[in-house]
Length: 238
Image 1 (tube, rainbow, N blue to C red):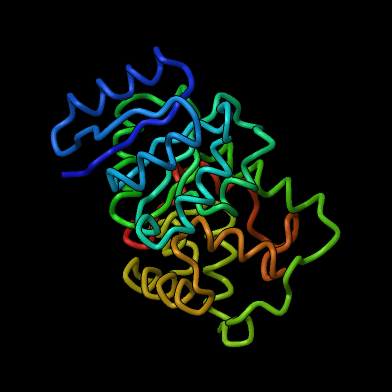
Image 2 (cartoon, rainbow, N blue to C red):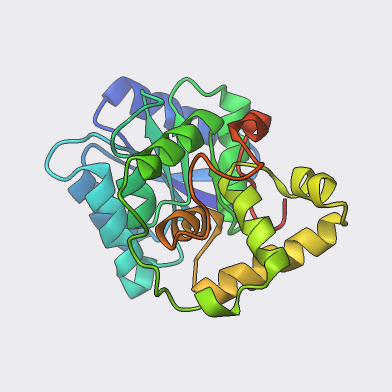
């Protein structure tokens, strides 16, 4: 059973999400939070598997709440799925840096939202294509790699670099396999190795590392945003 906490300052939406979770087999709601501070408190007391977290909330916003949840040892395994009204939300980068495992729009169909909950609960990550474009644009405006000396950088093989670039462009494992003419299991192995080398908790964090280290440069290479047609950036098991 996947335990879900809902955090949103809008009572109607919060209640609707809780009812959706409650009516879904394999999922159960463990509480509701009306602001980020309450979300942190309830996460520490109820230990949910997944928190559906609004970005903009009073008292403490969703990004800072996510950072705190991911920093406490007792809640470090809890996955946070961020929800926003805007595909160009300025907080995408900050949310992923804070440790969010996914980022979806609030107009996402219920079936896709529930699928997303299961994906992040399994330890994977996902990002809506429009949000990935926003992330790429964010790094395109930056002057250069923020941490070119990141641990693991020197041990990345040529093939792993290719896989990392395609992950950062928004392709899922099956799409990467087709691009590189290898099996999906081979791609999964490369992604797992990359996660280990960079100490990334999931695929969303791997995207951050790809751009911050300069291993992937926005707007260059043969792989473009046209590859973002897949619904999500999938996890290593996708």
